[in-house]
Length: 238
Figure (cartoon, rainbow, N blue to C red):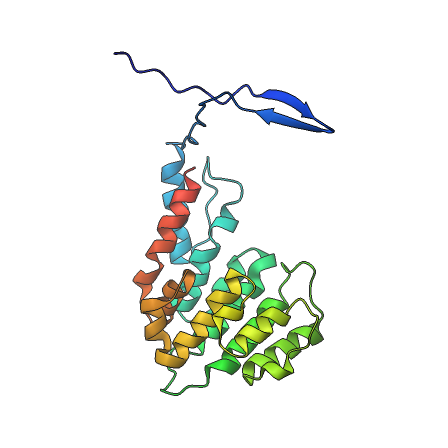
């Protein structure tokens, strides 16, 4: 029995519903998966190798125009693996403060003794994130300072009510992920709790998201950055 080709989703039918124009796809259609450019793979590999080695990026034909954005997590990981914040100069300017914040935080834990006071390190790292250029709207510096103080001292009473940062402040000043308003806050609260319980080693084993990679890199394990390379190559080839 012959196999029917999947029904394409184009062209779509435009139907007006009230004041809105709605596009309807044919019944049973299947969107085509995005095709990868076979010619782009060698360029992506060269760019990844240059990035990992700290070399200037070569102008590879066929490379995506936003390749610098894609390389952000490789550079952040290398900053941790080499314990050098100069890698953060390679990321896009608008996220440079985020890179510095991550380096500042995990740098403080490379040789942290048992019982290390992680909360002040978290407070200063969150302050740098708060002041970064990619915040919209951007909080006033005084708001970021107050947030950092509450987290550093682990004192929820210092959280100012009615501010955009209040949810984060309450959660991180008490190391309680359940109080977080979003996933970024949850990741930080879990990171702080794990650090208190077992330092970077525990984060490298049980951390969530990028934290697991960052902790392993900060412990001086350059191979920890390989997943970031694979993620870049996957995105770059699309």
